[in-house]
Amino acid sequence: MAAASSPSPTFASQSTSPSPRPAFLFNRPFLPSPSNLSFSSRSFSSSPLAPLRCFPFRRTAITVPCASAEVSSSAKAFRGLCYVVGDNIDTDQIIPAEHLTLVPSNPSEYAKLGSFALCGLPSSYTTRFVSPGATKTEYSIIIGGANFGCGSSREHAPVALGAAGAVAVVAESYARIFFRNSVATGEVYPIEVEDRVCQECQTGDEVSVLLEEGGGRLINHRTGKEWKLNPIGDAGPVIEAGGIFAYARKTGMIPSEA
Image (cartoon, rainbow, N blue to C red):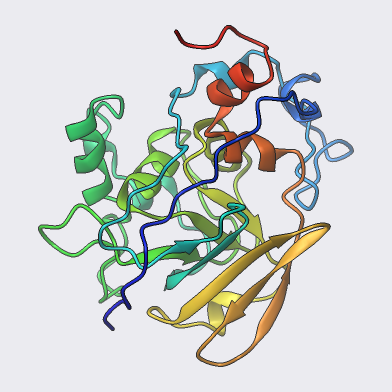
């Protein structure tokens, strides 16, 4: 299915005024217990220093030559083609281990990393997320089932998706470390939906993700169906800023770059 022509998505410029610091970046302990872990609010406890081990990418602007993703001026609404996967998509399927030698801070290697996004999916996925020979995908929104991003911890997983041109993942649930790496790198919005949307959407459907106060909506423009999205909580401002380092600079936690 060919993607309709649309402007390349960009994030709106951010205000320089400080914003509240998400509690999950500063509270302890590092390993959350069921009492302080909520996949709906995403306000979970963690070590204040652990996010700083992740890659310091700033994604204040996204250029997606192939993906038909349209982002509103408020950076809270996305529209584009979706790529549908099932349950338990692990990080080795998102980016196989042999590609982890690529250095995302190198622009050419960052682009190459995107070309391998989701290349570890089994052959039953006849439509590939990134076409052979391409570095960008035409599918800007990924729709998944339960436990998306499980398996080994690798920051390359959300980075590869973002490098390929994805802007959001909508899934029933996430592996905690993948969710955290998505926030820390600012590459993709990991959004939770309680319904089995992966069974009601098809790869190539045009969808919209609307992030609204208290939650959001996913709209399938082919079928006209809508689903309620869970709030992304305190993780939202960090992702919108471009990741943990960009957010830390924005709020004065660390000095701004000269």
